[in-house]
Length: 419
Ligand code: PLP
Image (cartoon, rainbow, N blue to C red):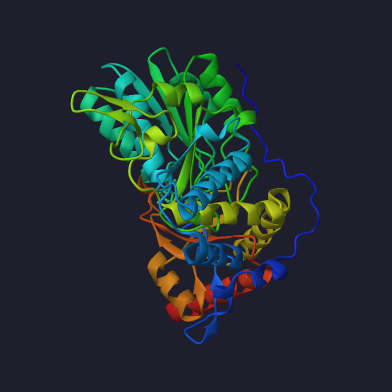
């Protein structure tokens, strides 16, 4: 099978005005070190709009109770809102059914659930799991753990200097004994958007299910799990303007039906006797104990906020920001951009000659500019490029070219101080 490189299609969208979006995020009016906050650490976590903050407050003030258990009015209201949030996630991902949406703590917990409940029972000595060199530790270590205990090989698709996956290598790696492919949608460290459609189609031709780590995709790109035909799609609420401690896993119904529960307790059973327990169907089977009720409702508010802004419009806005930042940074002597893939989301990673990324981050912070410095939980990718870490600026819908100008001014200041 010939796999074409996918160019990220950003359809022409209605012009997006980040200044209007900024009004929705009260934290952006903060001053840091006496300077207006310039928040460019969105890949680590995004800020929260009033719609989310007020939804959480309103829920705790008016509707809060435990879910699924009470006959009283508040419990019913809370249950309706919690299950309504599941339907919002379904719509956001275009999943066929809300029963295919499991609420979890986030991407990390979702991947661990698939590793332990889906992969572990299917893996035999001599099998392999395929991941890529772009992965966050969350999509490496859970596989290492199951592979190491079962004598299973972990295969890693390499990247070229630009940060693009070697698709020929991938074709060779997915073989008769491959039991799962797990790959990121967008690299958190260098911004590469992976050519998911072709990679999923190839795996499926060979009968191999695919998990997608969508942690960095959902706030930047429209995601349609039905069109992608992935088997699993994981994301975290806090990276898409929602609360921390909540995320979701989409999984095809037949996989969820075949997977044993991973954690057990209240709310995930049909009947319990000391001799035997009958489990509830998915998704309840994977949501043992009292869930993060307010988190799920806050997440739904965040997704509705993003839907109203329009992901095509957000993607087009961020593509303009990426273009601008790439041009501005490329003009700085001694600065090296890591990751120059043709398809990139709003993340730019860079190093400066003679400067540690932490020094860049600290000097920028003094000017109110928040970026990330370090290995970005992608140490193997850093090793691939022979470096310990980078400085990373990552964008969201509320960022502007003025934010990028502040970033560039901060880098120039850092250069001056290190001269
Ligand atoms: N995968 C990617 C690509 C990420 O960027 C992150 C977080 O940075 C994660 C997984 C883990 O997400 P969480 O910590 O929300 O579970």
